[in-house]
Length: 222
Image 1 (cartoon, rainbow, N blue to C red):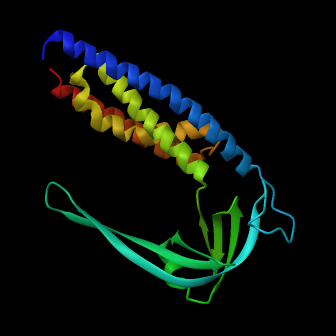
Image 2: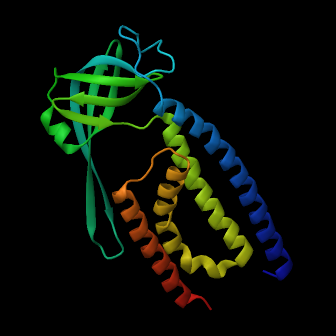
């Protein structure tokens, strides 16, 4: 492809990426406000119906109906197969039934008919306690914030690719590793999930791994 069309495509990619970053910043701000509202929400007054609760965390009692598990497996380029087991429990509260992800220990401990204490935010289950086990769940705004931040990181990579050209492709591996430190630091700066010493340790280690990966990628750049 000649220089003219290639330059046009790169400028178009840059324009789309920049526009996308502006949209991401707006969406992150909107969902961040919702997350902060949830994090600062008080418990609902006793007797509040979770279906009509406002900006407070409601409580209700549920029953364990069933449990389930399944495996998802992948095979790498060397033919090595690895599998991950996913566990869930079905709960019933009122006329509503819902499958909730749980860890292995909770899955093995509970039985149908067991009691589960739930906390709900705007109708979403955000916490479950049963048989001494506690499960925490993200709200839709927390999921959305995470998704928009990841999308922004990918758009930033596209913008850099548009600016500096396809020779950046060998650096993609390290760039993708850096997404975890980026999310940790961004969440901390936004006041959504301040990191403790473990979070900062993981961030520093993965930052080093990502920078090393990008440095090694430079060996393949002409």
